[in-house]
View 1 (cartoon, rainbow, N blue to C red):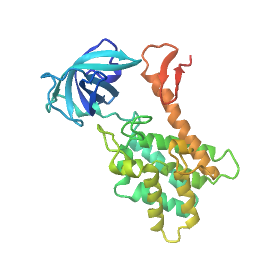
View 2 (view 1 turned 30 degrees about the horizontal axis):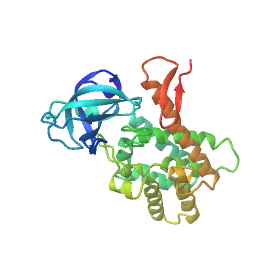
View 3 (view 1 turned 135 degrees about the horizontal axis):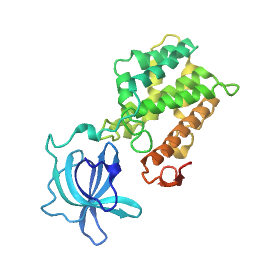
View 4 (view 1 turned 90 degrees about the vertical axis):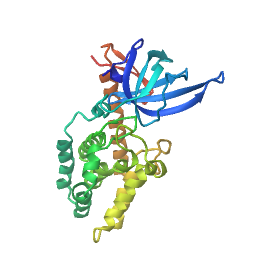
Length: 312
């Protein structure tokens, strides 16, 4: 298997990939061509079919295909010029080659995450977290297998859990560094901030936005879950529901990043910064890990908008 992460300019490719996207396009000269997004467990790569002839058999997005082509560098990014395509037959590929997974043990990570519940002092918050992360018949397994994003960070099976655990650790630490911080609210909000992603994104290899994800989004679905579960607990304080919902609503920090509200309480502000830091530090790590050159400068990261330098 020639993984996408190992592809280099000038490589001749004859390999099976998952077709994430297929678009019929029109060139400036008025010629029809296909633009594809191909994926495996190591990444995504663009492919172009400039000549639509008998070598390009019928296929659709969401299918495994075998392609032949040449890897080119177009405006600083690799791209495959594809000359032959056919549908892949069962047995020609291993599905596990197309499902990126966390390097950590998801069961151990989930045990550590749920371990924070025992440290919660507020009985209402503790019960809310137990009902969601332990007693719910579906959420635990979905949480373990979900991705944290389509492309930006932690975009692999177990990515949501890995990211949430990291953010919860950070929030737990920061809660003891400043006055006026309610640790129970902050830790609970950290555990819940991205829980809507279990409904926002489909599983691999597709890893695409669901209808709920497109129409509602994980922020709305997360706050809806909090409200729904809080109502099931007798005497759950309305103000506590309000504060937890606000933390989730504001965790993207700014309107320009899709946050419905700006952080207005200290717990929401800390959560926003811990969430932002974990996502961006992960992007630094990913850029360094993917670079095989051992050069100091590992390349331009589009999410961060800068060139990344390796520290000696």
